[in-house]
View 1 (cartoon, rainbow, N blue to C red):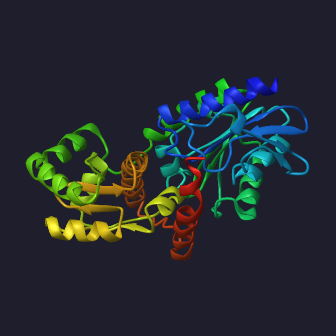
View 2: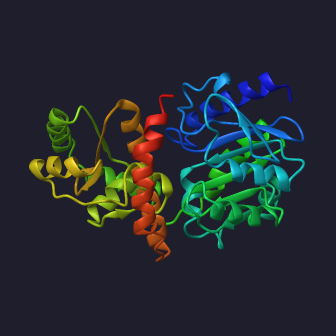
Length: 337
């Protein structure tokens, strides 16, 4: 593909992934094959909404050497593996889509999917966990790819989607999420959503949020059915996915519905659960606040789903702490370029 066209295609794809809710903030990554030796890939940690053609990095498949004004995505080795395994793959996206991420934690083996759907996706496999950007995750994903599967569920992380072109990759991502959404367990149906909404006091919610905003400029409430169910269950949500571990930490604690307790807890945590309210999140800026809202709901959905399977899929304490520290020192500063 012509290089300028490929660069623009990647830029446009980043925005489409955000619009479709398949990634949040800067998570995920995108690449496109240029020729037999080179690919183009998104830079590490740069906001998709401000990424320009010049920001896209050129990467050699054989040597791993790159050219550009930014470092390439930390997951570049996973992309390289996909192109090396499949000569007919010309476009790869790594998403953090909610329902597919949840199915990577529990229920993958019993996934309700037809043979025709598997054929459309190009085959699916589950890869064992590895810390983002490490040889372990690369090796685990490559092993799954070598079975012939062009969709790989990356345990505790997200999904890798391999396709012939950008259009096919996006269609696969959306189609996969539709399949996974019907496989989610744990009473997340319309009836339960209506019931959850009735358990929240709008007046008290507004009062509490106003009090929180007096101290934290960027604060919001998350009152999705999944979040309310977790809050009312009075059980902390532990990080099961890398993105929660990175931006929120190893857990979202439960705090009683007392204004002073909520504000005190938010001094330490950027997301908490409050029974009868839902979740309260606070951030340093508007973009981070919006990302936290998405992550809180996603974490709640995953928590309910894995509980329905009676399965614990928590990320280890050390790994969660490490990812939070690396994110705070590195990726949060790269977002603005």
